Image (cartoon, rainbow, N blue to C red; front, side, top):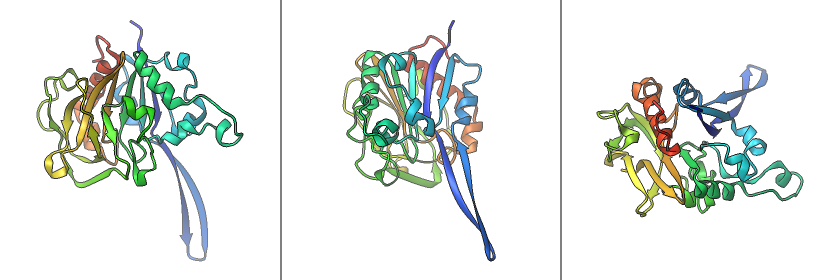
Length: 260
């Protein structure tokens, strides 16, 4: 059976540093990939993951319904809305291009799967700069973004509380989960198609952690913590349930018969 194609956009960044050594100084730039734990977790699975780093997404992210429809699901992770709105033809040349946020909304309505994973540039993000609030993408998610900086830092850690442990996404994941160190604060939509599967405990705010929903013919999922450090520590990546969680999440999102 052919593997389900999944597009993961985001989860990369560059950092610049200046090094001072007495009178002298020099600069350096480092490129980081943040989705490697998920890439490894999906190796040998029923999913063919296409990992599109954030700097590539500005130009390479699909600009047509036909391109999007070649994927069973799209994952947005640590990727602000501006990257998809400000194609270089718009930003540098003053030309019009298709609105990729509207394309994603319509893609889900036709039957596509959409997942947003938390991070500093997910949901509303640091300083509110991710800007997914009041967008066509927010319209189809099972949660609403806050109009402000939505980060909840929990340096002491918290463990997920499973609200619907019998759901197929959480099958075989009973018991205590490893610690998480933060998440994006969102509000759960009040809609019959929306279901909360897991949340942070009350002492960490009780915010939604894992929620699912439907829009038109498609399915959507919000995971408000990260897929790797820092909010999701290495101990969580090493947990046997890590790969199972993501495989079962994609199985549900793509409505596949088997992903484990």
